[in-house]
Amino acid sequence: MSWRTVVLANRAKVEYSMGYMVIREKEVHRIFMDEIGTILIATPAAAFTGVWVSECLKRKIKIIFCDEKRNPAGEVLPYCGSYDSSRQIRSQIHWEEGTKARIWQSIIKEKIRNQAQVLEEYDHEKEAAMLQAYRDDVEDGDRTNREGHAAKVYFNALWGREFSRREPSTVNGALNYGYAIILSACNREAAASGYMTQLGLFHDNIFNPFNLGSDLMEPFRPLVDREVLSMTLESQLTSENKKNLINILNHKVIIQDRLTTVTQAIGIYSRSVFRAMEEKGPALIAFYRLPDEG
Image 1 (cartoon, rainbow, N blue to C red):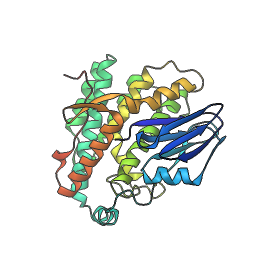
Image 2: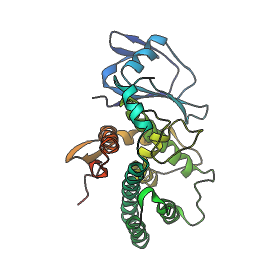
Image 3: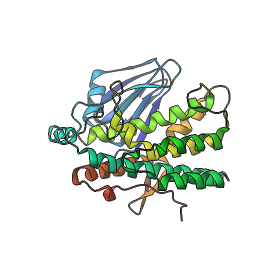
């Protein structure tokens, strides 16, 4: 199973040779392609061949491009990620609204549970109890927007009452960077399973090509929040900050009673969501747990 995240941060030429990604910098590096899950191109000075890109697409390797500030700006996905993608897309188009609402309810309840756990770790017991109450009140489709109410309490407790996710700041820059990495991993799993990333369960923005990934990623956001809280942030994100955020994909979690990486957990979880949609059973969703959870 693919697991490595490769980051290109310096001037380099990249090409494909006999199953390997060949990176020509001051030295030549060779990485076996079947071990790669994601490639982050964090420099505008990288040149690569069309053959290499084609081989990445064949192997469903996600390529993420960064802008001039080295923040994720876009990604490359294959047209057909699965041999039966046409059947999957037909099914996706006809997903029942009621089933989507129940699946979304389960996803949001899990996201809020994970947020409450972060609050408890940082001794915000009162706010954690508030989130648990919001979690218990989540309805089908989250009609009463418990997610939004929980988010306000959550972010204000962790970063202060003046904090806003809409305002530019180093904290928001770090959160956005980490969320983009998680979103990309979810998009990869959606495409690999043969589904259209544009058609979501809840998110329905016509300008968002990744509505489905935006839905899938929600329970994993607190992993990013926890990492950002542990960082020493300066006026701008450092390369070390970004490295740590990318490395979240290699952190260990438990899913289906086994220890695995976040990347692999995203795959297991995403496929369980698709199965839950097809079989109309939210109970089929496999959520992750942290290794030290009781």
